Length: 438
Image 1 (cartoon, rainbow, N blue to C red):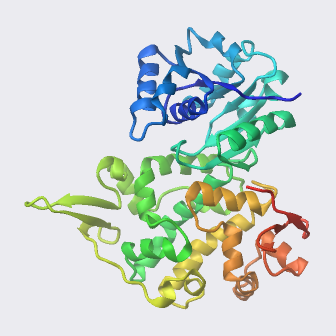
Image 2: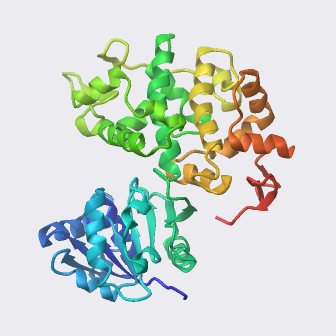
Image 3: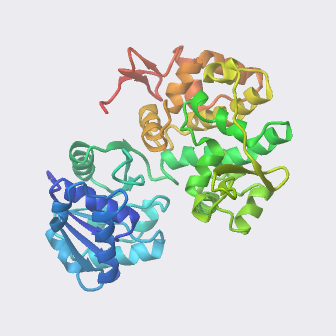
């Protein structure tokens, strides 16, 4: 069967649902947006049209979005090609909605859940075959309008034509960077990105005890290693400790028993005290950083010193030449270099051990981290920049077991994970394969 998506029913008008509805309407698709009641649906439409920024570039296309409620108007999904569930992240609530909608949708329609952490297999357990064959996860990154990454995850019974339909529409028409992931906890981007953040909170404690400060940690964990300027603490302030707390709890329940990430699912004591006190980040006026005003109205940034557990003024950081470049920083025998090797290197090695668990190839992992977390280079591209042979030699010198893909590379006698201008990549089988077009 050839599937084609030209209309979308979005169930749930929160941040993600509204973003998806706006993106579809901007393409000219007929959109049905259902929420718990009409006032809530109307507020969602107002955000789509008048938000900062609006989800819809052309306000004249707002007429393409029809509103309704989940209680009274669910039967209207029969007129739509794609039914996109974007309600609260609660397993039983999602399952109940899918039980209700399955008899109502038309044959040939495709279904997706926008979950960011609930396994699709749990959502589909005991559901009719007709739903299991036609459903996938479409995990957009927020905000939908801005973020390129869209992780596409089939279930065990999802038919190939469903994935083709989503790929054609989301990649071909909507212009998203579609990454093929697997039905594992946090998929690709959040699995690696949250490991980096949560492990960073723990590894930063040791660096701070050795004389580094938080401003230096963020300076190192930004441009030198190809990460955004927020660094570690700035990024967590942006996301919020409340979100990271829930991420940690979800990982604690769902990570494999021997996964390295299990060591970092709880906050270090000082960060837990921040969380308990409601010091969550930008959303509460301060987390690791905050902005303050003096009597004359001049604004300045303050840092919550994790050693003293008190606020202080921040200071500018001037990195040495050897610390401004990832290749020299990661192998530098200094507190800064050892920290970078531990944290950034740890995330690279973690990613290198997750093929084929979260993805069948290095390409999808690299794209997920570039498109979803704004890394300049994905983990395997960064390993190529560092020099895999040099990395392997150091790991062996430290007596550490090589992560899976580094072992594959060594056994294959390869010098890198990509070659010929990245037109080919090294597969898990040790052979070279054509790199799929973006």
